[in-house]
Length: 316
Ligand SMILES: [Zn+2]
Image (cartoon, rainbow, N blue to C red; front, top):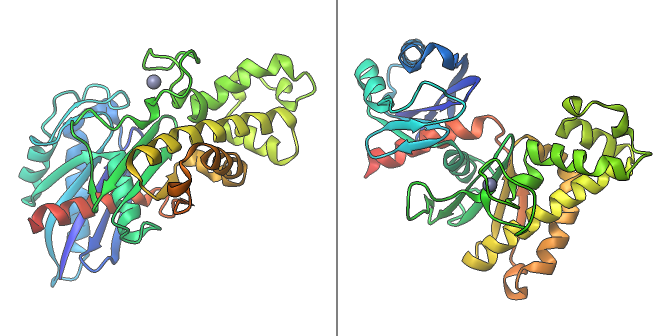
């Protein structure tokens, strides 16, 4: 039987898994990234884990490929990381070549948000739906459009769904432009909404906290307890998310939308304003077919998608 390694490299942890061609998750482990020690050291530790996992696996399994998910800007063709803000010092590092030399297995890289979508497509609620849109809500926002099971984009730097402009004179985004989706429904966006509105809701429990102690989880917790401001924040975030997703649906006709990331855990707070926004903004003929579901694979989506990337790459 053939199997593939999927490796999801984040700023804090690296998730490594083995997935068979029959969609069995054979083994998995998590190691620390320790990005400050540089990419060579991290690749050395990854290759040690890969070696140990191969030694612990049934000898009848052939390892055909390794897929690696990375944040930031990548040179996918050459398997190199160009730059990533949460992996400082890893600029222009030939990650695929370095890992291939240590493991002797072909290595393929891709953007982590794209791989989360590929993972949910393969083993999550995507359930091999030919076309889907996935959006991941976390510190930032990642997204990917899958067309016929493949990541669709016409340029490697495209697919910045978090920087879709929702409000032309909105708040300034980390990218320098105004009114991006990230200014509403990322971690930073939710906290900024709280900061902006607190003076107008003097009875809100959020007044009791320092702004540095406010998190999406705290706002969600207070919203569930009935705090008006906390509910207004999630309502506004869900509405903004609905506008962004409506634009994607109206433009492409995609009908399955999967939402993942830590902020999607406040599903019951986001879902209603989101669906209301979709109903208002999506063309009727398209809206009738739309399904919005929560992602199912959590932290595993990235490495499962990475394994699928390798499976697709070697089958060509
Ligand atoms: Zn932006």
